[in-house]
Image (cartoon, rainbow, N blue to C red; front, top):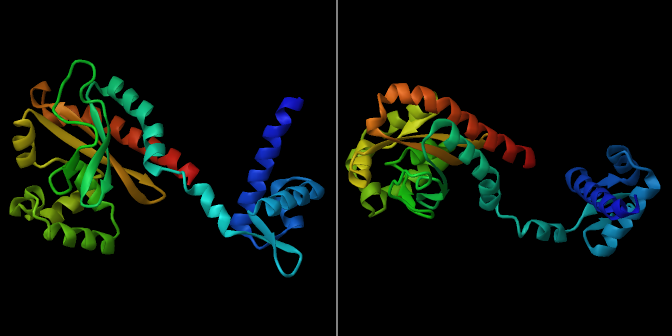
Length: 260
């Protein structure tokens, strides 16, 4: 049992620090009640946190708060890395279930960036690479990401794209009917890549469908599946793929939300 004491002490310390951060200023009595710990234990933990510079006793000498040093605790957190860590096994399970590869992409400035792909796995090679920047207006992942933005953020993003000299940002064909494409993505919960983009990049060998990954009401990323056109009727394939794609995205989102 003694070997577990350091772990228990760390767990209790982190619990108290979290409670002070979330509910401070707060008294030791209220902390003890919230943490379900004896008050003398809570007082000892508070004294340790004060000595370490993460908490302080307020002027009333009764309540406690956290110091600015607590911000350093999050400096090493990489949201994209955590997303990738959670998503990778789920996306591999998706591949096994539906038989088609997927891309996981996040918004970076004025493009979507592929942070995980299994498109070259298991004998099916489709051009593309990890880290590739792909256009917002031409791809399914870009459309569901834009559709999930708040109105002001969406207008700001579109204003930047209008100033872009990139062909896939400036093409009038992609701007035509954009409002309808965004509305359909919000209504249906998925979007397709633009046919012109598929023709130029993949010689129309595939089609792609994307769904958003939503964390606490915000679209944080998008997940797409890529399907060979010759595999069968699109609607029939979509009926098989979309439920699993949505379920995978929802699971990733719920796991990230639980940690937020």
